[in-house]
Length: 156
Image 1 (tube, one colour):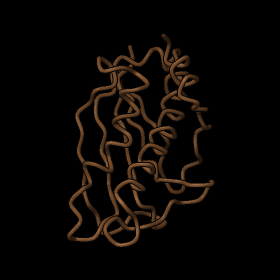
Image 2: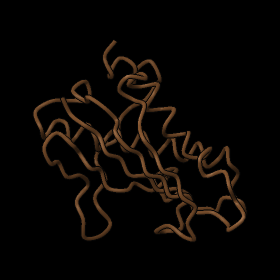
Image 3: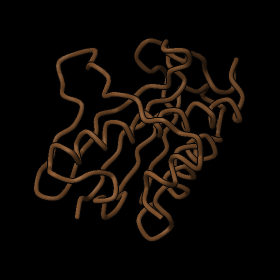
Image 4: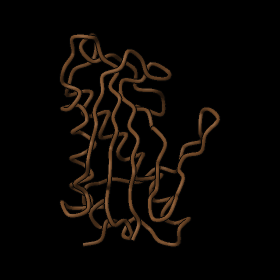
């Protein structure tokens, strides 16, 4: 089954690449690796704000991370197309780095990040979607977003 068939089966439509909010580009390719800039959580087209451990639950954070993963897939598709392929040409999701806007006592950043990690596994399968990962708690994220995630992928 192609990645696009899996996305269709999951009811996921990929968004266009977001316009950067500052002085950076959405992705950079070097060799076969694609580095995708951090994407913040959005809900209804606006920053999904909140702080885990204060006014946002782990389940809400996990849903926000899943939403980010969908946005990251849209950017990854654009990067793959720029390289002459598409999402079926992704050889491996290499690394996910997640920043979770959280209180000093909140310790479930890893569970929040599962929202993205699990989606990559669903879409690409374990051989391609399983990845190295870091999940950090931070004091704040741009625009008050609850989660920000960046991605490194390898193209075939």
